Image (tube, rainbow, N blue to C red; front, side, top):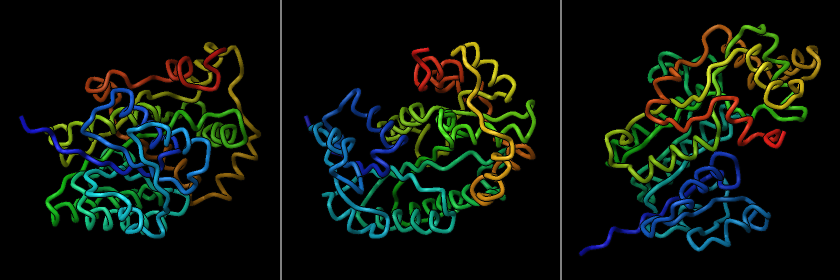
Length: 301
């Protein structure tokens, strides 16, 4: 009986939240037909060393400034998990496209790209949010290059991350920026660990109709700020971490391209995915209370 060929998968952001979640999902049920190549800029970091201790993982060094050099380290790569840095939209688009070009040139057959939900018309709308538009442009480029190469892709389109809630300046700032939209304003959220689980499914079932050349929106909860506060207080016994309103206003002004436009869009448009519908396909997607209980920094409380 012929054995299935080995599928080598490059995972960018391997020591980050999404890449790390994908690696955790793939290694929780290891298969001999998949070998992971974990991309990092610092192979001596504690997280990179932990990955390197797994025989099913090869840690490689590189960055998006030289994509061909990254893929040159992988013999016959089959898959590529692409996650981009949203802090500069123009750079994100350029680097995302360069990585796709290098992947296709190296012979990659399936790309899983983490983009974002862009409302009711995610397939055709770039939106006014710069780092949403850059991801849309990368998606379109992957579609074009996949048609040329005969490869395939899966787009994951998550909403806001629960992990934006953290007991530090950025986490408190997120809540303060949200409050400027009003306590009744709603945002949809998802756990990055759940994104990793779906990404793993997309690689393991790349030829299935559910994943081949498909886009999948992901959300675990649709919640107002008032409901968010209540849930946090009931589950942790504490007040929601938050800073002064003037700080939130300042962040939305100082980081207008990255945050200000996005929070305005949350209020005027918002994510389009229907939570109940997507949970029908992926029932493990956590709501906010479950995330607080199982994954958050306050889970012991």
